[in-house]
Length: 238
Image (cartoon, rainbow, N blue to C red; front, side):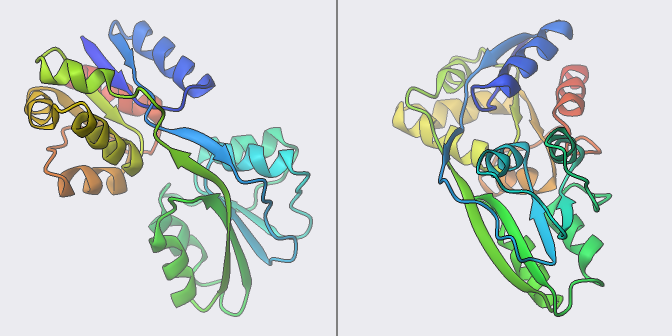
């Protein structure tokens, strides 16, 4: 079972490959995201600070930032664990690991508060708009940019040849970059056809919505936005 995984080429990709091998699948590592730090750090005067990824936590820490008296919020357990590894206390983790889940968790508490959102350059407007609607004074800091690595697209070639059994999209941007890579290879139509016979897994509702908006049928969305759950569900679905 050939399973494409699109995580950045760091420990996340290595862990994904090891997990898929342990499940009896053949991983097809095809990174669709590369991280380019901006050198920025979150503001230090916010009442609430929201971090949305493990990468963001690590970059903020590398710039010497620390939470201080802010209410520290993490969008999911992986992000929260990275905060704890940095020696920080996490005050809020929403039950639903999405932008809308974080807005719901904070909406009754942020009216009139200064809220710092520190994340990538491709963060959803749903988070900042929702907090603004709740009466917060929102400031956003871009900690890193997400770009498509040169040479990405091996899995699109496999899909075009009918040899891809599953694809695990771990963010909306991985969907868009995969389609871009297929287009650059001149095989978009054939690659799309190949996806129709594969198990398509998306890590959460926003990623599913992006895939479906591009005409990709989604078979698997795990209960939690967790890659291991995604991988296991996709392998079982096949």
